[in-house]
Image (cartoon, rainbow, N blue to C red; front, side, top):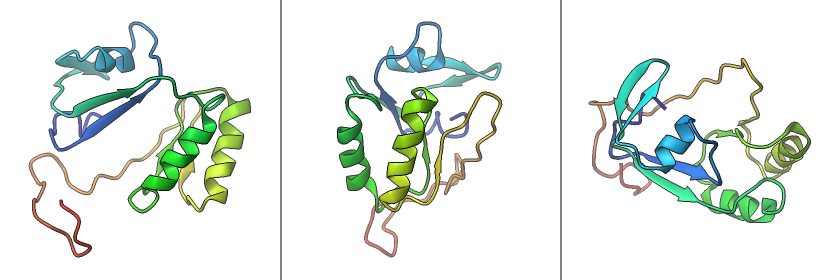
Length: 132
């Protein structure tokens, strides 16, 4: 998040309700500056909130969304929900063909690889005809 929050070419997708006094809530409330691990960042990435999603009642909708994004998604990190609902959801995503689905627990470190670092982003069209 810290590596990409100041890049206006990025989108941060907030799914459902965010607890007060959390980074997620600050982003959902469109705070212009946030703190991540003690550092202050200016939010330049687009922040979008989809309310009403949950791995419980709306799992079918999340599965449809994942299916539509399948060609471009490299890693899915499940950060919402209890293990009893997140683990079956993770398993269903794996059955759909997603190879890198992570449900971290407290204390886990998850590596996220960025294609470009801030200031190194290129623009144009890639070999597949997609805008970069």
